[in-house]
Length: 307
Image (cartoon, rainbow, N blue to C red; front, side):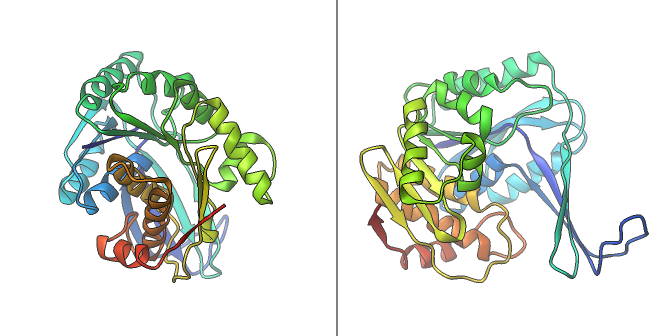
């Protein structure tokens, strides 16, 4: 079983306009709502691959039921820590010029008792999990050190995956993780330097390994991804596909990597699965996850080389 811990769920509201006119009334052409959060997307991805998964994390009283219904539809059991308030709402406004304007909410504050409660849930649930994934941001006002503490609460028999950025990622690495999955832009921002060459990339990954990661799965966007344990490094080039949305692609990568890690797969297969799931996600219209059929189709057309 894979446990996926959602630190910061969100309602993503995507609005399409003919043109965004600032300071004027705008008429909506179409509107869609997605009940997401990085670890919720991961849980759905794992379920779509046919593997057992459980979701936990923080959830909020005013609109949390919509997330629970979405997970029930996907066959994902959950045990959330209930908090007062509303899940944050992020707005993505797309106009006819294909320009994207994003407005991200900061969400509600939660009490210290809820932080303690989630750590206990993770202790209990991870004892039954082969892999525990902790990903996403943190609720407003929560110190980045919480990432370190909650990863330390994971049962020692469970493999640990972290997917977050900046100070949160460095805090996670202090606890030690079996796999960390940044993308190139996030890693550049976190380390404060540009990664242009193969040597730049491997040096950056090595820094994460020296800080506490056993393996780094680095997404290069449309260029594919790299995986390394500091000794062996591999590259997988993505295939050309029609991109409907890049939302959730990284979460798809984590879901597939978690499944492969649970199976004891080697680095090339973890990498290949991650790229297949990320690619399948961007081709799937109107959802933040992928279909197993598309995943298997892409997976069969990928190859891995040494890096």
